[in-house]
Image 1 (spheres, rainbow, N blue to C red):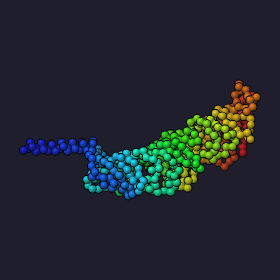
Image 2 (image 1 turned 135 degrees about the vertical axis):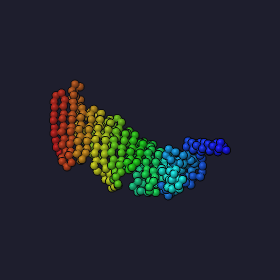
Image 3 (image 1 turned 45 degrees about the horizontal axis):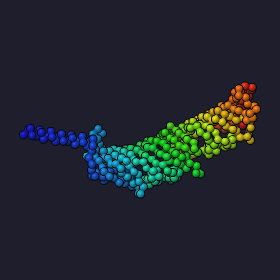
Image 4 (image 1 turned 90 degrees about the vertical axis):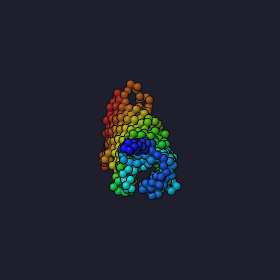
Length: 369
């Protein structure tokens, strides 16, 4: 008798262990949790609904959790939806058995959706006029998202978010139908910090790239810092003027072969006013012709312009070779160099110091305006 009892207990224990192992590794297919999934999603936002196919239940003994998984679902707000690749809802096993608030986190991996679909979904989720205006400037492109939504175990309906993903081949109308095209980047958003990585974009046939741009949100204000560089390419001066609002009429409008490397930081307040602007720029050029209404003696070649701006102080240093426009003045053996230092400290006048040098003469020309 004891032998049969022992064998029965052993068999039940073995089957239980096998079932737990099976649930831990493979899970079981069930439709009994469809309503529970919809309920937990509505905890995040009451207007969100799901269109679900197959649902699998798995145990995670290491984390003492139940994982409810479904794939190829659609998440809706009104008529706007996002296609999902994978959805995991993790519940605290003990609290679930006690019928308490058991939600630990929700993990979402989306399929590649059009940016228009996602922005329409976000506007339905929580409308914001300034965000709506920005979204309307975006055209085309796709987005893929991974989101982790963490539940505050001590406070119901309180969530924190970590979102990452990638943007592919979109474009933005920055002003007056001037477009930044072929925008591609990865992003990560956590604790009011927005990280943008591996950025590539095109403006006026110029290819730009950036390793990282970081945006930190502090209340209603934002702090932004990052870098941006462009590959060596021909550029027209009116392109720079459009982007910077600088008057560059002292330079001839011929195309210039150049490359740039720029580091920058600034703040934006709730009124979109920029403050604490700081940047460091290095520009390497092949040839610059100055506007003949200002001078028609020389042009600059094979030069470098280094610019530093901080605390309303501006320093520009131009180091370049130069050649006379009149070939009769040129000599292949001459080594012609020019250095121009431009300095502007806050409310003071601009100081310009120029050094000309060749084998025949050296000129130092300081000037203040």
